[in-house]
Length: 246
Ligand code: PGA
Image (cartoon, rainbow, N blue to C red):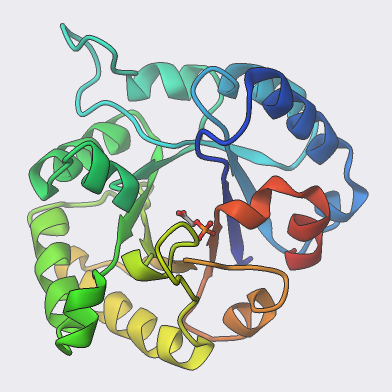
């Protein structure tokens, strides 16, 4: 299976700048020939037009979030059904920035995962320990707990798929003194997550790494057998960097 490269643009670009970058991405020969499956996650407003721009390219579209239900009185939310209708195939769910700033908890994230699956979106579920948990040697304990909270009782059909993004909170480029995990350490954590998720879901799933990924460290991660791809924030805003990673 191809390695996955997910570009999380967050809210970094204006509407015009987002569309301009989508145009540049769609014209890139290097992305077209890439050995990776590339998924671009623009913000909600840019997403439908980006989907039209990518129509004839192999680039796929993901949303950065989705509502926990499909329809109803949920002011300000965006339905996974409508995201699917305008071209999204993936949705990032449970990003640490949403957990921290918008107080999303495991119950909300679990509901979003189920809502996304019900509309045939592939959830890219972010999990990762905070610095304090790492320093206390509790990374695996935290990950096991979170995986149980998010995945217990979930039954994936043969056609349903989900992806876990291992993103240690302290490694995300906007964290104070952020730095990426070493490829060797990340490999061992990914293998652990795969085992735990396979036990809970009775299905093998892909696990990708995120947190300060750049052109210097991407190859090291992608060379690891248990790391199925990358979730890239800041470095995905430059076409040349994304091309180099692919
Ligand atoms: P970063 O962001 O690559 O800038 O660390 C990753 C993420 O937050 O998804």
